[in-house]
Image (cartoon, helix red, strand yellow):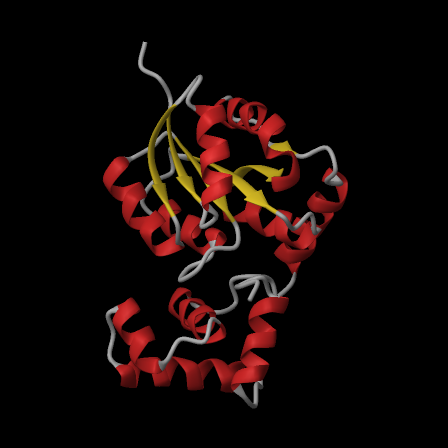
Length: 213
């Protein structure tokens, strides 16, 4: 019988190695990536059954990477890892397509159960997370015009890279667009959100969980 394939996405080597040791007893770990953009590419190439993904990753956060993968792959299951037990993070991860949300502090003991639940089409949340509060937040987001996702995909990518301190040229190279286009998106975001400076954009990115920088 074919074993379930798992792709790991986390930029912390110690976490990855710990998870690999736990998972390889039952699953095939077919790849490891350290940033969100590499995750999108690896998911397309490897077509795993399950992706275990850290929310806070460089270049593209785990939630936005999940949204991009979901546009072409509705089969893969997502299990989120995070140090953030905040209801806002959890609700956004579930809305992006996550089946499970596991606290990093207990990942070693919970990850197997989380993956098994995801494969059965169930939702798994770490016991420390208030599931009722998560459902209530999801309903609020659905009613709110300011819910996560009000920016376009490209705008969110630019905001994260700006918040990470990348230069216009670096952002252009990463996104494979022109520096002028980067500047256009940055200006559009600032006008749209009423931001006055790059510092304001960084604060927005952290507040809205685009980056944890």
